[in-house]
Image (cartoon, rainbow, N blue to C red; front, side, top):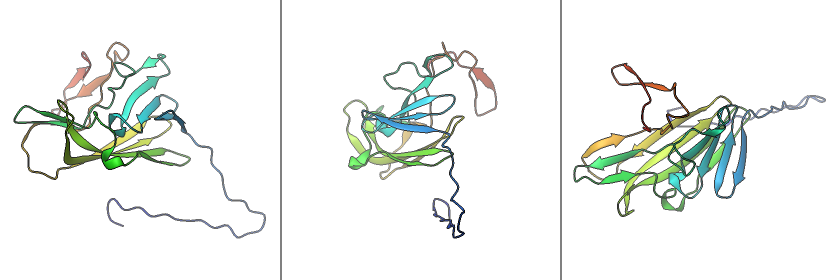
Length: 192
Protein backbone atom coordinates (compact mmCIF):
# COMPACT_ATOMS: atom_id res chain seq x y z
CA UNK A 1 0.00 0.00 0.00
CA UNK A 2 1.16 3.53 -0.65
CA UNK A 3 1.12 6.43 1.81
CA UNK A 4 -2.37 7.70 2.61
CA UNK A 5 -4.17 4.51 1.58
CA UNK A 6 -6.21 2.46 4.00
CA UNK A 7 -7.27 -1.15 3.97
CA UNK A 8 -9.94 -2.94 5.97
CA UNK A 9 -9.38 -6.48 7.13
CA UNK A 10 -12.18 -8.71 8.37
CA UNK A 11 -11.55 -11.57 10.75
CA UNK A 12 -14.04 -14.37 10.53
CA UNK A 13 -14.66 -16.89 13.28
CA UNK A 14 -16.00 -20.19 12.09
CA UNK A 15 -15.48 -22.49 15.05
CA UNK A 16 -18.54 -23.42 17.02
CA UNK A 17 -18.49 -22.04 20.54
CA UNK A 18 -15.84 -19.39 19.88
CA UNK A 19 -17.06 -15.80 20.06
CA UNK A 20 -15.45 -12.84 18.34
CA UNK A 21 -13.28 -10.82 20.74
CA UNK A 22 -14.67 -7.62 22.20
CA UNK A 23 -12.67 -4.66 23.44
CA UNK A 24 -13.48 -1.94 25.93
CA UNK A 25 -13.04 1.49 24.30
CA UNK A 26 -10.30 3.56 25.93
CA UNK A 27 -11.71 6.92 24.74
CA UNK A 28 -15.33 8.09 24.97
CA UNK A 29 -17.26 10.03 22.33
CA UNK A 30 -20.55 11.93 22.59
CA UNK A 31 -22.34 14.64 20.63
CA UNK A 32 -23.48 17.65 22.63
CA UNK A 33 -25.36 20.24 20.58
CA UNK A 34 -23.14 20.96 17.59
CA UNK A 35 -19.96 19.68 19.26
CA UNK A 36 -18.14 16.40 19.37
CA UNK A 37 -16.97 15.71 22.93
CA UNK A 38 -14.05 13.30 23.19
CA UNK A 39 -12.77 12.26 26.59
CA UNK A 40 -9.54 10.53 27.57
CA UNK A 41 -7.84 10.13 30.94
CA UNK A 42 -6.15 13.55 30.84
CA UNK A 43 -8.45 15.75 28.77
CA UNK A 44 -11.88 16.49 27.38
CA UNK A 45 -11.70 17.79 23.80
CA UNK A 46 -14.41 19.72 21.97
CA UNK A 47 -14.70 19.91 18.18
CA UNK A 48 -17.39 21.97 16.49
CA UNK A 49 -19.22 20.43 13.54
CA UNK A 50 -20.10 23.88 12.17
CA UNK A 51 -17.56 26.47 13.38
CA UNK A 52 -13.85 26.89 14.22
CA UNK A 53 -13.01 25.06 11.00
CA UNK A 54 -14.19 21.79 12.51
CA UNK A 55 -11.09 21.88 14.69
CA UNK A 56 -10.23 21.09 18.31
CA UNK A 57 -11.28 24.50 19.63
CA UNK A 58 -11.35 23.99 23.40
CA UNK A 59 -9.95 21.50 25.86
CA UNK A 60 -10.75 20.82 29.48
CA UNK A 61 -8.04 19.78 31.95
CA UNK A 62 -9.53 17.52 34.68
CA UNK A 63 -6.49 17.81 36.98
CA UNK A 64 -6.81 21.59 37.32
CA UNK A 65 -10.59 21.70 36.83
CA UNK A 66 -10.10 24.35 34.14
CA UNK A 67 -9.56 24.79 30.40
CA UNK A 68 -6.10 24.37 28.89
CA UNK A 69 -6.80 27.16 26.42
CA UNK A 70 -7.06 30.84 27.33
CA UNK A 71 -10.83 30.69 27.40
CA UNK A 72 -13.59 28.19 26.74
CA UNK A 73 -14.91 30.10 23.68
CA UNK A 74 -12.35 28.57 21.40
CA UNK A 75 -8.77 29.41 20.67
CA UNK A 76 -6.99 26.16 21.42
CA UNK A 77 -5.92 24.88 17.96
CA UNK A 78 -5.74 28.22 16.20
CA UNK A 79 -4.17 27.58 12.82
CA UNK A 80 -3.00 26.67 10.12
CA UNK A 81 -2.99 30.26 8.94
CA UNK A 82 -0.83 32.52 6.82
CA UNK A 83 -0.17 36.19 6.16
CA UNK A 84 0.31 37.44 2.61
CA UNK A 85 2.77 40.15 1.61
CA UNK A 86 -0.14 42.65 1.32
CA UNK A 87 -0.57 42.23 5.11
CA UNK A 88 -3.78 40.12 5.02
CA UNK A 89 -4.24 37.15 7.36
CA UNK A 90 -5.93 33.96 6.11
CA UNK A 91 -7.10 31.51 8.78
CA UNK A 92 -8.78 28.12 9.14
CA UNK A 93 -10.53 29.12 12.39
CA UNK A 94 -13.19 31.57 11.21
CA UNK A 95 -15.69 29.37 9.38
CA UNK A 96 -17.08 25.89 9.36
CA UNK A 97 -15.75 22.97 7.32
CA UNK A 98 -15.27 23.58 3.59
CA UNK A 99 -17.93 23.22 0.94
CA UNK A 100 -20.68 22.05 3.24
CA UNK A 101 -18.65 19.01 4.27
CA UNK A 102 -19.08 17.87 7.83
CA UNK A 103 -16.57 16.80 10.40
CA UNK A 104 -16.17 13.03 10.11
CA UNK A 105 -15.18 10.63 12.84
CA UNK A 106 -14.26 6.98 13.15
CA UNK A 107 -14.25 5.08 16.40
CA UNK A 108 -12.38 2.02 17.60
CA UNK A 109 -11.28 0.51 20.90
CA UNK A 110 -7.90 2.30 21.07
CA UNK A 111 -8.53 5.71 19.52
CA UNK A 112 -11.05 8.00 17.86
CA UNK A 113 -10.13 9.74 14.61
CA UNK A 114 -11.75 13.04 13.62
CA UNK A 115 -11.13 14.67 10.21
CA UNK A 116 -12.14 18.08 8.90
CA UNK A 117 -11.48 19.95 5.66
CA UNK A 118 -11.57 23.76 5.85
CA UNK A 119 -10.88 26.67 3.48
CA UNK A 120 -8.41 29.38 4.42
CA UNK A 121 -10.56 32.48 4.99
CA UNK A 122 -9.47 36.10 5.10
CA UNK A 123 -9.87 37.28 8.69
CA UNK A 124 -10.90 40.88 7.89
CA UNK A 125 -13.85 40.13 5.58
CA UNK A 126 -14.33 36.32 5.83
CA UNK A 127 -13.73 35.76 2.10
CA UNK A 128 -12.91 32.09 1.46
CA UNK A 129 -9.92 31.22 -0.71
CA UNK A 130 -9.58 28.07 -2.83
CA UNK A 131 -6.75 26.97 -0.53
CA UNK A 132 -7.74 24.22 1.89
CA UNK A 133 -6.42 22.34 4.89
CA UNK A 134 -7.21 18.77 5.91
CA UNK A 135 -6.92 18.32 9.66
CA UNK A 136 -6.90 14.89 11.29
CA UNK A 137 -6.87 14.23 15.03
CA UNK A 138 -6.27 10.85 16.61
CA UNK A 139 -7.46 10.88 20.21
CA UNK A 140 -5.97 8.24 22.50
CA UNK A 141 -6.53 7.55 26.20
CA UNK A 142 -3.37 9.55 27.10
CA UNK A 143 -3.70 12.46 24.63
CA UNK A 144 -3.92 13.16 20.92
CA UNK A 145 -1.93 13.50 17.70
CA UNK A 146 -2.78 16.16 15.10
CA UNK A 147 -1.88 16.05 11.40
CA UNK A 148 -2.43 19.06 9.12
CA UNK A 149 -2.07 19.02 5.33
CA UNK A 150 -2.51 22.31 3.45
CA UNK A 151 -3.14 22.48 -0.30
CA UNK A 152 -2.69 25.75 -2.19
CA UNK A 153 -4.65 26.09 -5.43
CA UNK A 154 -3.32 29.56 -6.24
CA UNK A 155 0.08 31.16 -6.43
CA UNK A 156 0.88 33.29 -3.42
CA UNK A 157 3.83 34.54 -1.46
CA UNK A 158 3.11 34.30 2.24
CA UNK A 159 5.26 36.33 4.58
CA UNK A 160 4.20 34.09 7.50
CA UNK A 161 2.88 30.51 7.54
CA UNK A 162 1.96 28.86 10.84
CA UNK A 163 1.00 25.23 10.58
CA UNK A 164 0.24 23.60 13.92
CA UNK A 165 0.00 26.14 16.72
CA UNK A 166 -1.69 25.47 20.06
CA UNK A 167 -2.69 28.26 22.45
CA UNK A 168 -2.25 27.44 26.14
CA UNK A 169 -3.00 29.54 29.18
CA UNK A 170 0.35 29.96 31.00
CA UNK A 171 -1.48 30.62 34.30
CA UNK A 172 -2.68 27.00 34.48
CA UNK A 173 0.27 25.44 32.63
CA UNK A 174 3.25 27.04 34.47
CA UNK A 175 5.70 24.22 33.70
CA UNK A 176 4.90 23.88 29.99
CA UNK A 177 8.01 24.33 27.84
CA UNK A 178 8.74 24.27 24.12
CA UNK A 179 11.86 23.98 21.96
CA UNK A 180 12.69 26.27 19.07
CA UNK A 181 14.22 25.04 15.80
CA UNK A 182 17.73 25.24 17.25
CA UNK A 183 16.77 23.04 20.22
CA UNK A 184 16.73 25.80 22.86
CA UNK A 185 14.05 25.16 25.51
CA UNK A 186 11.70 28.02 26.51
CA UNK A 187 9.09 28.43 29.23
CA UNK A 188 5.61 29.52 28.18
CA UNK A 189 5.32 33.15 29.28
CA UNK A 190 2.51 34.41 27.05
CA UNK A 191 -0.63 32.95 25.52
CA UNK A 192 1.12 31.70 22.38
